[in-house]
Image 1 (tube, rainbow, N blue to C red):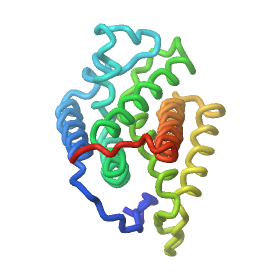
Image 2: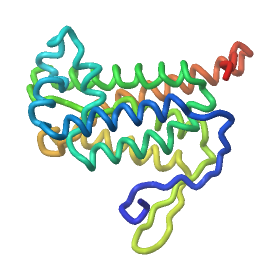
Image 3: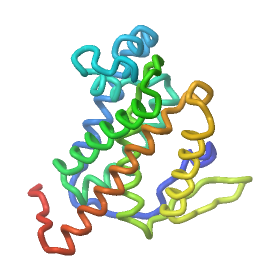
Length: 218
């Protein structure tokens, strides 16, 4: 994966419990997306989130669009990020809080995309908003972790906070300077989801400092 420019997790953070929510989400996303790929255009047009018609199907497209993806590379990239960064986030948050983080980040990402262009008629699909929330939480919660990529046949291992800062800057550049019709990427959804991840980290940190943080029973 590193040879393709995809970050590889280097820190070995042992898990205290099996990341069942992460694995379950990944399995459901894979099953639904692979089934939809047999007739992708119809699935995306029917169940993707359209900003100009976000209330269709009684608002269910906020949920269904999360489980649909625009192709194999889109699906594999999101599943990889979910599994690599989600297991540690779920381990420290617990199942319910982790699921809440994903749900809020996905919803915030959708809302951000709608507000950015409320008249857009191109369907938006993918779990990227929710996964962006996981990524933001992970990078702030584990700042000493490092990731590695191969660049010009050399390993580069930046801290995750550096990677996250670069990622945010790139998403902001795409969101404000490159039309989504050109990139095919819902950059505002990524930023909205990441904002929830930052707020979630801040909230959990304050709760831990105040002594009100209660770990979930396994």
